[in-house]
Length: 350
Image: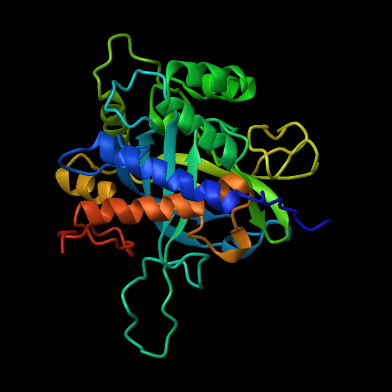
């Protein structure tokens, strides 16, 4: 087995810095007054309590890092639209599922938001959360940070710039078209990492696959915020479940690290279940949950080193997610803090 190979563009750092600046300016323009919202995934359907239950007796090649042994972690999961506008839920969009495990020991790749200092002063002081960031399409829109930055420039530019960019990037347009979907229920939708991650010395992708018996149908005349309502209704009736699965890279050419526009073949590399996500029966429809979910931040680099994000898009995410979360929290005069339990903070303002 060859070690995972990543390829860095010569101007990657400059491109990523430009992406950060463009997205920060976009946030300012879209939120001139009041709450500073996320640059994407600003419309939240709900933030919910969950358990992440790691399977016992995993094969040795999968029992790595977080998956080394059977364990149940408490988690928070945030479901959202990607679009920054508060448009009706029936609109075609990319849908997000961001998972935050708690009480995950050992040092993470980023420890920007530390947990409370331990009672024993000689004990290690680590961030105790571990994030997974998933969306519904199995592929990412852009090939690399430079192409993503070019898309941002085109969107902000003239009609001519838009036509030139999108006309010369048919794969990006194709992926974007098939990524935008309407869904009946966020708890009944499949989600993917789209980009690869390390698993020990191998490259993998993640998927959260809902366990369904009778899936909901798209409503005929939906309310603008029906996705929150159907989530609330389902979780009042009982628990919801997903299989959390891993797809192991078997072919470096057809399953590339540096081009997440390409979907890895499930026929060649089937997803393998490594954990169960149990979203508990609950009521999340209140202001406390909304405020908590708004203040949460997620970053795929908030992870154990054995699960390091791979590829240029992930390298961009490290800087972009961290910078924009810090900017948003500062603008909203909120203190960034990682949760350590299912207890909601009485106030996040300092």
